[in-house]
Length: 160
Image 1 (cartoon, one colour):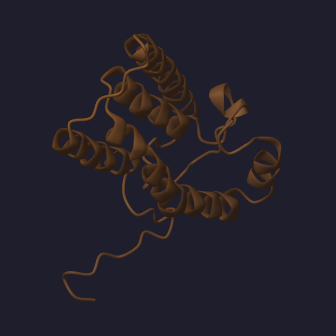
Image 2 (cartoon, one colour):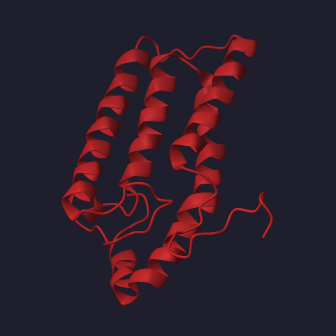
C-alpha cells in the first residue's frame, strides 16, 4: 500500500464524508449562487417566522437524537463503528432524525434569509446524502446488527 492510499476501516459504513460536510458544501454553493443571481424569497412577510420555526424544530430534533446517542454510549460520527443500535427517542419515528434535523435547519436558514438558490440546493444535497451516506449506513447496520436492524427498518420509516 502506498502512502496516498487510506485503508477502509473494517467496522464502518465507509460513507463518502462526514454528513455536515455535505450540507455545508451545498449550502455554500447555494449562497454563492444566490449572491451571483441576487435572488430573494418573499413569502408575503412570513419568510422569517417560517424559517425560524424550522430552525427551532431542527435544533430540538438534533439535540434529542444526540442525547439518545450519548445515553446509548455509541458514536455520533457515522464514520466510526456503531456500538449499539439506537431505537429510542426520535428514532421511534425516523431512522434518520439527525439528517431530518439537518435538512430542517438548512431549509429554515435558507427560508429565513430568503435564499432561493440555497433552498434549491437542498435537493441535490439530500440526493448525495442518500447515496453517499444513508444507503451505505443502512447496509453497514444490516450487516452489523442483522435481524435487529432489519426489524427496525421494517417498523420505522427512513425520514418520517
